View 1 (tube, rainbow, N blue to C red):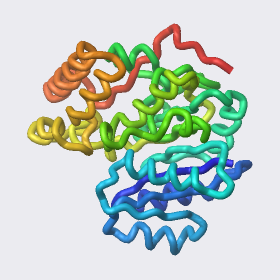
View 2 (tube, helix red, strand yellow):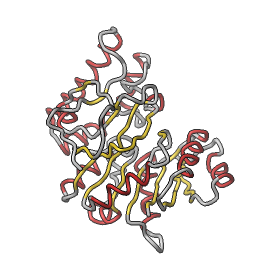
View 3 (cartoon, rainbow, N blue to C red):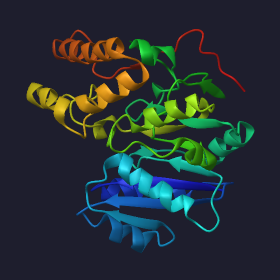
Amino acid sequence: MIEVIIPVHNRRAVTLRCLELLTRQTNVAFRVTVVDDGSSDGTSEAIRERFPKVDVLKGDGSLWWAGATNAGVRHALNRQHVAPYILMLNDDVEFDAGYLSSMERHAVAHPSSLMGSLAVYGEDPGRVFWCGQAASYRQCRYGYVRRDGLTGLVPAEALPGRGMLVPTEAFRRVGLFDEKAFPQYAADFDFSLRARKAGYGLLCCCDTAVVVSTSETGPGSVYRNDPIGVFLRSFWHVRSPNYLPALWRFWTRHYGVIPFAGHIGKVVVGDFLRRTGLRRTRIQYEVSADSQRSS
């Protein structure tokens, strides 16, 4: 049994599409909780009408990703019959009918690990957006990776929340997502790193994938062609991956001041190179030769 937690806000059509894909899952038992953080577009009403078995929790618009996800996790932990696994899922991804069963199969085989999802580009599903890269995340190296031949499990240094399957017991040992320090971005990476320090393994399942819509990323993202003013303001925008307060807390908590400075430098230089046409807009982490797949 898997408890699926989906935080949403004002993306009615996107959310309904995600729930429709979940109805097509095969060979797996699961429950779904959607945490609607203050949507004004009728998201909750549409869910209750089309998917009456889905639990809908309501927020006031101040929860952001981490707070909304925590609300869903608390709901899952307080059920009479608690599921052994909890999956964090973003509503803007797509996946095939075997996604949940594949994730569960690997999780059962590796009970002391958190499981991440291989992510590919919606614009080019053969191209990898993320696949558990380890040292390249810390060292800020980028490259282009194809999906060809990626199967099984890849060791990961940190896991994103767009398809993170967590043993329920891990939340009791590690705690919830740090919604105060990381309201929107970095809460997922921070949680997985805390779990690793607590003794859990971090793995990425490459037997199935989530398809990522890069247009849905926050302002200032390298995947968007935002005006220079939007890019500069993104460093103080909670919804942006460039939000400086969260980045400072994350990098200094887990890696140190120098890697933080390196990351910010990479973001600024990368944006400059993109604007001058010296580098393509969409990039992703490089898979190093020593990142060997396990069973």
